[in-house]
Structure formats: C-alpha cells, structure tokens
Amino acid sequence: MNELDLQPMTEYESRAQRWLWDTMIPAHTITLLAGAGGSNKSTLALHLAALVTRGKLPGDEYGTPHGVVYLTRENDVETGLHPKMTAAGADMSRMFVMGGKNIDLSNDVNRLSLLDFARTHDVALIVLDPLMVFLQEMKGSFGGVQSTMTKLAEACTREGISLMGINHLTKAGKKADAVSMVGSMGLSSTARHVVMVGKTDNEFLVGVVKSNVGPTKHGWLFNVRYEAIGEDLELGGRVIEAPVLEMVRPAKRHEVKTMFEDREDLAADMRTITLLMYVAERGPTDSVSAAEHLQVEFSIRERSARTTIGDAVSSGLVSRKAEGGGGDLRFMLTITEAGKLLLGDMPEEVEAPRSLGAFKKYDWVEAS
Image 1: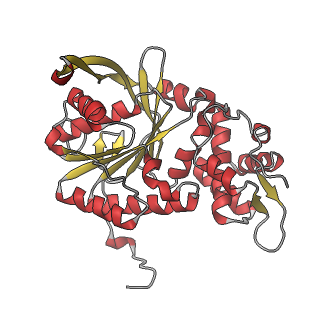
Image 2 (image 1 turned 120 degrees about the vertical axis):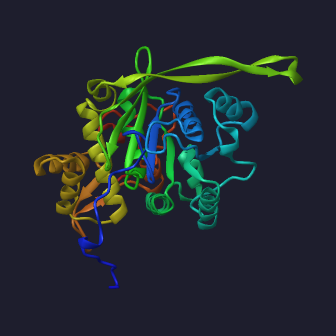
Image 3 (image 1 turned 180 degrees about the vertical axis):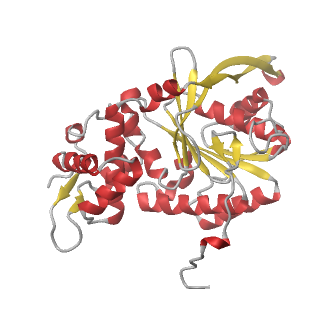
C-alpha cells in the first residue's frame, strides 16, 4: 500500500445510495435537521425515530425494526420524551435515551462508547437534539467542530449508522434564515445532507435544501395535533397529552423553493457565509482559490464568486491586502465574534442583520 492509500478505480464498484427515509434521510451518514423554534423539529425527529423502531419508516429498512438512540438535553425523560414517544407509537424496548450523564462527543472516549453501544444494540439511527449541546468543548471553534463531525461521519459510514443532528435557528423570522443558518452551514461542510423545517399558513413543511447524495427541493407537508395518551394516577388522574404528527402529502417543488430557497438575498448570504468559513479556517487565503471554492460549492460563474468576495471586503468582513506572506484575503472578526457568527450563537433579542452592511451596525466587525 502506498503512503497516501491511493487506489485505482478498478478496486471499486458503483453502488446505489441507501435511504433510511426514502429520498429524505440518507442511510449511513449525517443529516442536519434545522429550523426555527416552534417548527416541530423535535416532534418530527421523534416521529421518524418511532417508525424506525417498528420498521415502518418508508426506505431501505422498511419491514425491519431497529434501535434508536435519542440524546437530548431539552426534554425531561418522564414528562417530555416518554409521552411523546408513546404518542408516536415507538417500540420502547428499542428506544434508548440518556440517563443523568452528559455526553460530549468531541471527546474520543465518549464517541467510541456511543458507537460501540449502537453496534451491540442494532441501532440504525442516532439523534442529537440539539447537536451543539453534544459538541460543547468545540463551541466557538469551527475547525474543532469540523474535525469532530468528520470523525462522526466516517464512523457512521463504517458502522452503518445514520445520525441526525438537530440545529436550532434564531427566532428572527424567515428573512433571518441565512444568517441564523450559519451554524448549520458550518456543520454542513461535513454533513452530506441538510433538511429544514418551516411553517406554512396551515401546515409545517420539511424539505431537503442541500444534498450530496440525492435530489433537493422536495419534501413533505405535515400537521401536529395534541392527544390524550393516559392519566397520571399520582396526580389524581391528570390527563397526559402529547403531540401526534401526521404526514399530509408530498410537498411540491415550488413550495419547497418558496419556503427555503427562492430568495436572492438568502442565496447571497449563504455564499458569503461559505466564503467566511473558507477564509477563517485557512487563515490568509488567495482570492483566486476562494473564488474557485465558491464556484464549485454553488455552481456559479467566476464573476458572481468575485462579486461575493467584493461585497465581503467592502463590508469589512474580510480584508484584501497581501502582507507578511500568504494570501491576500484575511478574516476580520475577533475570535468571539467569529464564534457567534460561525456557530449561529446570536442573542435572540438582537434581530439578525438583513444585509452585509448591517454586520457593522451590531458591532460584529473588528476595527481595522
């Protein structure tokens, strides 16, 4: 074997992509599920998890029940998770939740222990809700998050496990999606599939917005209602209610585009976000390679890529000045500001900037 482990293509063969949820959640890799508060991301994740435990989720594992590990710090087990899983019809013997110990997956020992448990309990899906809670040691470090996510992605492929990381957006509304998606965009450098959840006038919509393994701009409309699932005899027979999710119909292509992607300001902001991550990760970078990176990521022309770079420079997010060797592009945010921007950790009381120039208004840019 050569040092770089380079192999001729004759050593490989073409294979079809396997799906945990047909064309929506790919098997054996990482999927990011993002959405604003109140969009029922967790309810959707629990619904899918329950179907996996009963072998009822449409996909390549349909008919074969599997275990699910659901890790969360946002729901008490007995008053939150258990009622919701009951309402979703989960096979409780195949649903595993976290006890009192917190799990930091940036720690190699914890990550390997989780994967070993999954292997010995026939686990097909691991859900992290929310994802960043389980990467706490890496919070504020894009490179650290990327490294941990890469290790998780490799392990998912190797062990045949699907991982769903739930990422919360800010509550500033539709127009803020691009800015609040920074966390998801940063994580999606190692996630091969990104799904978003939003609310229409009457229903909720889950749609695929990025995929390296299948089609995009498709999804499902669903409703959520509350039902009584039992009584708590210790509290005098108080009724226990929990959300029940019902799929309505496949979403039409234009519905997904209108909800998530049919806005030029959103596309422009996402290109800028990708540029910032590229420069921040590599340090001084030449503008030619940065433009090429944008062209590949977004299938845009060189002129559009250079326009994105020019906008970022004029807004003070990056500088274009060659000094002391290296490239001409430099990141102009402090470590704290970069952490807020790249991980989407913006205070909820601050409305997300709606244009590049607005970053300065909120004092996110380091004075040059």
